[in-house]
Image 1 (cartoon, rainbow, N blue to C red):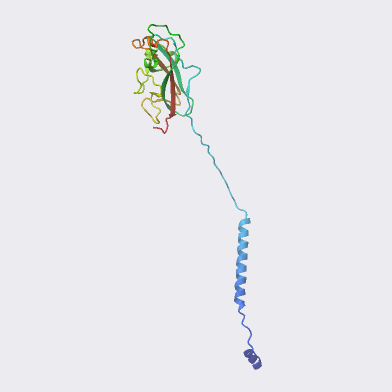
Image 2: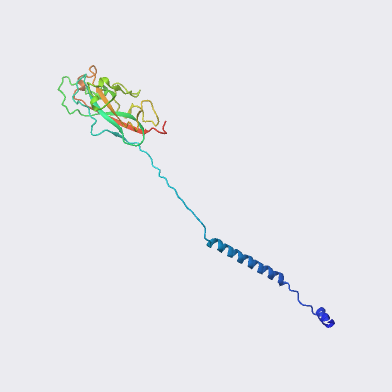
Length: 234
C-alpha cells in the first residue's frame, strides 16, 4: 500500500477537466431535443377551428337631368306681328336616383327668318330682333297649359335679377337660378318622388317697340339646364 501511495505522489492521475463541459453539452442536447419534440407535437396535434367572412356592396346614386321627349321645344308661331306672343312648353325631368336642383341659362343669336322682306322706300336699317323680344317663364301642369288661353292661370317663374326686359344676351347668362354650386336663389328642385315638371316659355313682340326695321328678322333662343345633387350640397 505504501508503494501505491508513493507511486501516486510521484505520478498523480490527470485531472479530468472535460467532465463538467461534457455534462453541460449533454444537458444542452437534451434540452434542444425536448424542445424539438414539443414543437413537433404542437404543430401536428389536432385542434378545433372555425372561420367566417362578410361582404357588402357600395354603389353611388345618379344625377340625370333630361328634357322631355317626344315633345320638341319649339315656339308655336314663326310669323309674328307686333303685339303677338308665342309659346313653347318643355318638360324638365329627373331620370336619376337622387334629388336634384337645376338652373337655366340662356343666350340668343340672330338667324334668318326665312321670309322675304318687303321693298320699302327708304329702306330701313335691319333691326336686331333680340333687342325687342321679351321672355318670361311659367310653371304649368302639362304641355296643354302652355298657350294663350291657359297661360293666365299659370304661375310665373322668378327670373334672375340680371335678366333685362328687352335684351337677349349673345353670351350665356343666368335666366332662372344660378349655375354656381350650392343652393342659389331661384334654383328649382326635382325630388325623387316628383321627378318632373313642365315649364312654359313665352315670348312677346311688343307692339310699341317693333317698327318696320324688324320685318322679316329672326332670332334663336338657346337654353342650358345645369343640374346638381341636393343632398350634402347646401
